[in-house]
Image (cartoon, rainbow, N blue to C red):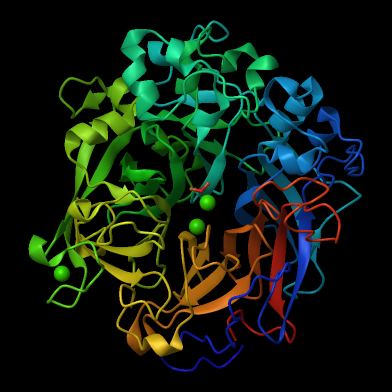
Length: 596
Ligand code: FEO
Ligand code: CA
Ligand code: CA
Ligand code: CA
């Protein structure tokens, strides 16, 4: 093991400088490789990827597009299952001459449906090194593709409710497929929780639903009409036409649980966790053993949620534990600043007490089949959760994305990506900047450090941007020694409790990347850039393995730049050819701990 310098969290690497290079750029002394690319074989009978001869049949067996949340389930020392979300598709980069909408071929639309969802692949490494690779050939019994067409089921209080019934599923219990799976999490019993985010973009004729449903359609920003640029899934599957099947939209926007070790299992949409543009589903245990799930809703002015199960987690009782996500209380967060409102002027200037901080409460929305929101039933709260949270007076945040709990301190961290629509009058201490281009990071400390409690204190350890910009804050650390950061998106912790932050949409004009920052001791706020991703890409994943020898990142949408096409992509990563969203792994060349 690498000696740990006191106070540095063991982080001694030389930061990567901001850049616009079309490469995965890593610190000196490190190596990287691509683990799995869009189109790589997942199922044993998958054909080799052929960019100019794609088919839906092939895509259904190959690694999907736009990899996002990544997690690893160890199987002994040198084998593991890798779960990866496939958030969405970039047809303009996937197909030559693609013009979209009515002009897309049926096969292209079907490829799009198959390229969504998630993948489970077996990975392997040689002798305990940090270099993991895709296992090919031989028996890969767990490998699986989940797509927008995989049969699923609803459980929890809203399962079987009228709001979820359609012509194809009159019982309201068997949804088909998952869409726009962005961040995620895992459960203590070894399953994946994957979060359906921007499901609104897959539907047409949102203006033709019954009048009573219209406010909820607009609250989830489902567009009217049939924009020519949309994927037009409705041309292949009528359910995406809301004029014909208005409630189909209610069947997306959930947390989906998938058991990676049971390839025959049916993915489960857990209705007790509410419906919004879900991000993350980070689990932890309350002091009394109840299961807690932290979740964000990633749109401007949306909310932060948590679910607390009714029953307790019981070690070893898997059948019982697998019911915990079906009954409990769904809460939404309200943040109150401790500085005078007059000191929060939208400029990001620190208030006189030296911190953006305060107290907060978790407001209950629904417990099992009991609604806490006047005028809404429990099922309505779960299906139209955004409306319920509006009525509860929750705090409108700057795009809450990923959330993680620090394994050392118990603090809960939230990436708030940005919100350029916030005005100075709308600034509050938890969202202190107007036209917030660069985002911030929020730390929640639950009362008594108990995730089951309903009050907390909070602060902003990081207000992002160029450190030369006075409207930035790096937990009071010397700003001449930190890396610039913009648009924090996904977060994770290493076993030492260092916070790793990936970015999406760097508004400082350079490529997105991955950063790390200690959150305690003298080094709190000492943010350093660990890697940058290729042109047009967003950094997703990230995951530092429990042995701290590897960091996985999902390089999502390389080459996604204005007007990009296969003949003129913004990136040619990873192979110098067509850009392919891929999961990469980074390790220290001498086998040292990540961050050394
Ligand atoms: Fe899919 Fe919130 O990023
Ligand atoms: Ca304050
Ligand atoms: Ca994201
Ligand atoms: Ca995460």
